[in-house]
Amino acid sequence: MPDDKKLSPVEIFKTESNYLRGDIGQELVDQNDFFGKSSIQLLKNHGVYQQDDRDARAAGRVEGHTGKSPKAFSFMVRTKIPGGKLTSDQLLAEIDLCDEIANATLRITSRQGLQLHGIVKGDLWKAIHRINEIQMSTLAACGDVERNIMCCPAPLKNDPIRQQLQDLTDHLAKHLCPQTTAYHELWVRDPETGEDTLMGGGSNGHVIEPIYGETYLPRKFKTAVGLPEDNCVDLYANDLGLMAIHDGKTIRGYNVVVGGGFGVTPSADKTWPAVAKRLCFIKPEEAVDVATAIIKVQRDFGNRADRKVARLKYTIHNMGLANFKAKVEEYYGKPLAECDPTDVTGFDDHIGWFEQGDGNWWYGLNVENGRIKDEDGINLKTAIREICTKFKPGICLTSHQSILFCDVAPQNKAAIEQILRDHGVKLSEEISAVRRWSMACVAWPTCGLAITESERALPSIIDEMEVELAKLGLTNEVFTVRMTGCPNGCSRPYNSDIGIVGKAMKSTRFSWGGDCWETA
Ligand code: HEM
Ligand code: SF4
Image 1 (cartoon, rainbow, N blue to C red):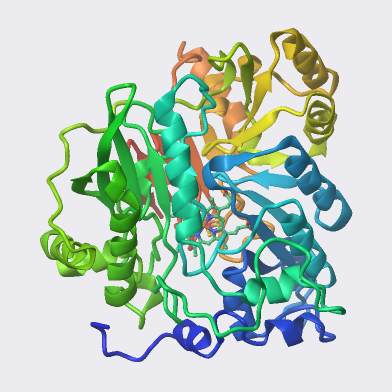
Image 2 (tube, protein in one colour; image 1 turned 30 degrees about the vertical axis):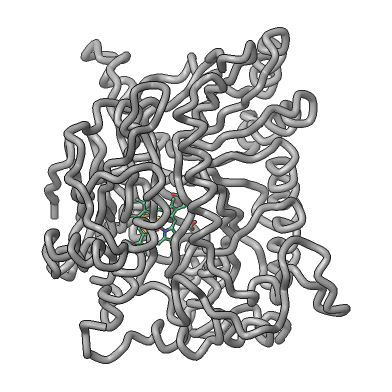
């Protein structure tokens, strides 16, 4: 490790955790409604964030509580879904879970995952166990590991390119998933009988993580697989982006881009949002090994003393791109070619009706800020339940927090539209361009890092924008508006056309077309 400074506390927690076990098992069954410091960090690798209700905390402050602020603890559970592909039954099970033990809403994330919010500690095991029962996983949905791998979700059945991209995504997701059996021991195995009825081994054996080692990565690692002409996964926003270079029939290889990441600490000048840099061109058969080499270089050269500057973007900045490339070549064992000149030319949100290429159709439904809920007469959750129960469409989640109902027979198109209308849900065609192309991060009340509102504020900001845009005759203009409740950039505001970033000291950071400035 290049940095001989003191290791950050999270590094110590990981080192002492015996491959992500720590004290999670004991604390899961103690009398507290929260976990200790070490478990909070380790749990992220299991897809769990300890949170508290920020509204309740603020109300407590207003009421003048003394001593420790009163916290209503709950947990966010994120399901990792490579390429955002799942079945109707899996989505129905997540909706059931949100009604039974979460806050009655389910959130589609901006990285094609699903999040449950508001789960109390006593229900945590049930939530994760159930997600595994339906053949999905929360392992490595958060934490210092390779997270959910994104991929263009368009279900074009006659498009060999997209099929190959999803195959690569699935392969990478499997290959880069942590191997620790701690996850099975904690969440899958029956705690009373010790029986492990579900997938995987779950042995007590001492597991060596072949890629990560016992301290995993210095920081989170995000990967996306996409297309230059349809960059719907925002390749350059990721630590690792694989851009397919193809002729419509075959993928000739991938341009590899590295070191994207949007997290910033405003008080620390040493931090910044970065789009990825172009590294090399690789053949399809090299993709898994080169991705592994890049991750291993970050494992060995990333900063483990200061988490603020631990992402790959800082490792590359410190080493220089040429040295970083040389190190990747050393780990991979072969020289890497220069990038193909091809670059991103467009992107699509896949919203609306499209023929899939096999006689069936998909319907891309815009979900405002990804929140599936029944509220104020707009009963989206119930509508999705009905569609999934009646027609069992394949489901794809998009990186714009929206949903595609796939494999719809032509004769069922009208019925699906009718179900949406009957539940007060606007069809995608009836939504303004500015709303369709907007997204907000979660922020208040669940995110512990939120400084300002985001998800709860953006809809009314869009209301106002719709009025102003109509006055200017720009109603049909397509541009992206992305908002966050702090500078960490979870809804990717820094590469949107208009980014609104919540900031402390009553200031807001705006960005237009990628350039940022701030107002005090
Ligand atoms: C230092 C940087 C960051 C930190 C500490 C951070 C932390 C968090 C936290 C605590 C949440 C949970 C919020 C909740 O559900 O209540 C969250 C959500 C999320 N973050 Fe981040 N984040 C960071 C940067 C990013 C970036 C750069 C991206 C993507 C470009 C991202 C993608 C997401 C996604 C997809 C979610 C799920 C909810 C959503 O779609 O808005 N995060 N993040
Ligand atoms: S951008 Fe900030 S406020 Fe929004 S979810 Fe991410 S960490 Fe929370």
